[in-house]
Length: 111
Figure (tube, rainbow, N blue to C red):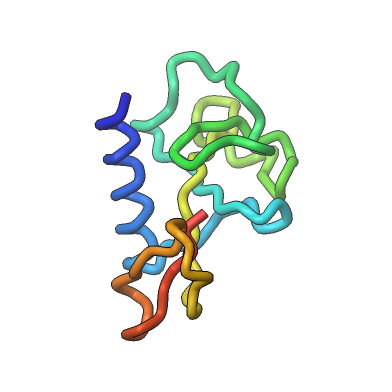
């Protein structure tokens, strides 16, 4: 739902401000974070991590640098895709947003 998406977006921004690093995904240009056991889905038959949207859970099977041995959700490796940000001048498009972690006058392209 829309409220869940807003919450997940805010969580992604908080992780960025706190400097949370990605556990995997850099080889695919995305940020994937292993979920805690309390976030594990009851059904682990979910999409692999290549091509999921921000906020979505996925199962890592080696794609995008995901582990095949973390077993954070039973015998599965479950990740959440989070937003990543980089500071720059921005392109002046709607996708550019001011970023609290960027220097004044810089913008963040959040993907």
